[in-house]
Length: 234
Image (cartoon, rainbow, N blue to C red; front, side, top):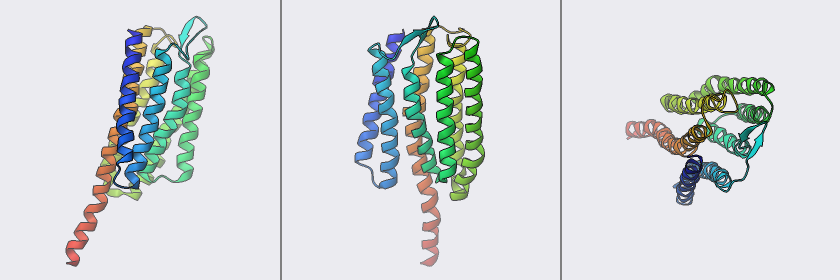
């Protein structure tokens, strides 16, 4: 079961990367090229992760439990790109964007320490990582959303949908972590792999297509007032 889900993840991420790569090559303007390119690298990085796991790499038995440490390396590279993508769509200021990326990297780093630490020390680091995530949630819901809506008031619903989907998906990761062998061993390795694979596909490829849909809607909110003004002038 584990190998099957790893293969599904590898194929799914590869197809996503190909789709985003073609999109970037054929993008109609710079904004679309940027969004497609960021999504391409997110999917490509994840595809490499799953290829490594399919080949039996990036895996060790640590304190008697199987640990795919390569996941954390990949998350440390791909999740900041997701936040950069959100920042681009929301025209986020550099201090807020940098703060979100910093909180994210700190969250991933402490989560990795939790994964390779013996119990109960691992739970302490897990709590630290969750604390960093709560800080990131605050930045997204307060500062990011405020700036995004100020830049484009008509895109309020678009940003609400983006943040809702993003936070639902990212919140599921620490839940899987605590239920898996890294935590209380409620689920076995097969179910853990399936859960992470489905979440990764949704959070990277699925969210990538959602970001493209959001860009289209944001462009429409800008174009609509301009067209209305043109009609008045005529």
